[in-house]
Image (tube, rainbow, N blue to C red):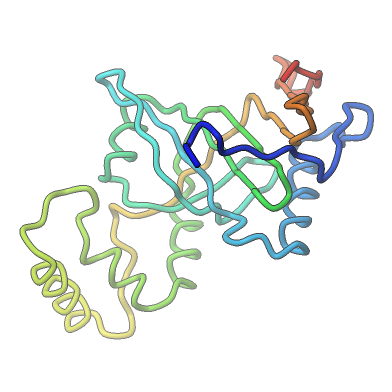
Length: 211
């Protein structure tokens, strides 16, 4: 079978602009609960797209760690490629793809760093080796060998033991959404697409888009 022959017809559910919650954050939370009930693998995995000062896009998978009325939060190394991109252009896009439910959620908006206290709180509940890894790795920078990377980890472990501090170059980002699309796969590629756009007064306007 060729790649061009790979296809499926979606029929899991429907989505109506008259049934979704007026608040897209609440709608997202409801859909996210569905992923947990359905035991969707890695339901908090999301594609993060950024653009650097050279105008070139970059895309990778990160993990959502919090969502509330303020926005969608993840954590990373501020000196990584995505960190440098966001320093140059503090706008980004996110996509969740929940294959078993035949659903996608896409978001666009402005990105800001979370405050120091929030980054500290999350860092301190991470597994110990993940905290040490955040100290040991200069994310996105070249390293001559795996052995050197493991040496850096061992040095961090020897220095900090069970109490590694959050490094200043590591912390959270929050995307404040301005545009959110909920996509439900349907038969014959006539998918349901409901889009919310934040208005100047902060309220959300929703409408259906053609697939």
